[in-house]
Length: 154
Image (tube, rainbow, N blue to C red):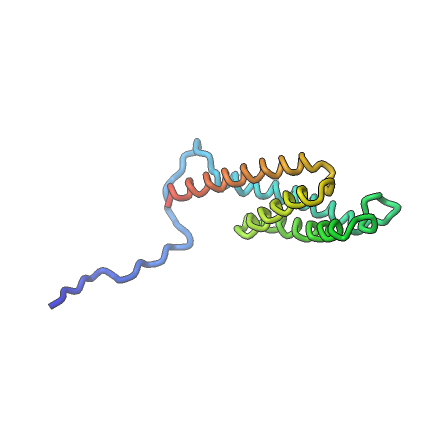
């Protein structure tokens, strides 16, 4: 005859909010908080980029020499793409949502591709490329450290 144990066959779900979780000392760096602040600062930068692209869409020939009428069709498509995707990425970054980081990384990859395909599209191609690389490295480091910190207190 089989013996039946009194242990449940499933694990109960984890609570959404943990009350009385492990205390953190004030000396520890909270990488999750740093990551959120970094994402919010990135959001402001990407809002600025998106608005600058919309400025080139909405400006007239008298305002500037770099308008849609003077660009190639690939340049026009790139401006329209970045005018929309930069603002979508900025919203996701501001919310500190996982999809915001993904959309931002896609946007950065598109910027690198644009630098390779359309040299001179950005005013300072080399500076934009280097800044993008540095920001991605900082983002991944903060994400990694925040995940390690979170795993230590689960």
